[in-house]
Image 1: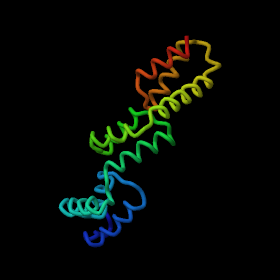
Image 2 (image 1 turned 90 degrees about the vertical axis):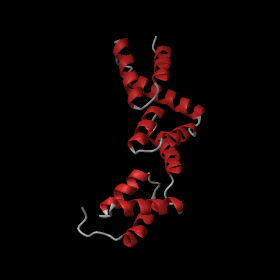
Image 3 (image 1 turned 45 degrees about the vertical axis):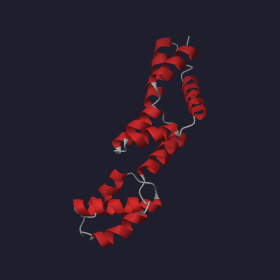
Image 4 (image 1 turned 180 degrees about the horizontal axis):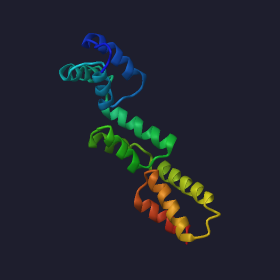
Length: 157
């Protein structure tokens, strides 16, 4: 609980600034509003205002989040989907965001990550351990099992 509660009138400009600074999902914004000491009705009303004034757009957030985490952290679709679900983003928005990721770039990034990891495993003599480490790394990055199995069986024979 905050030391001092904000009124909805005081909270609105603060939360607008919070949303304008960086794309936010609904759950982050509501959490922030609750941290101001607001009640559920006020939080819902302010959230509606933010949506109407386009400060808050779940689909836009999902697309930016998915693209950004794919480009900067090289996450796969599985991990991106999982993280967006944790942020309570709708299934529709998640599907739309994942569809925005270019398939060619996705496969190129996947192959690059696999190659880099494989080069790091040069000293590993046991082929089974090498396969397992590569699979674990790619799975942790959030890539699909069918892609992982395909590349592991192709690269390591």
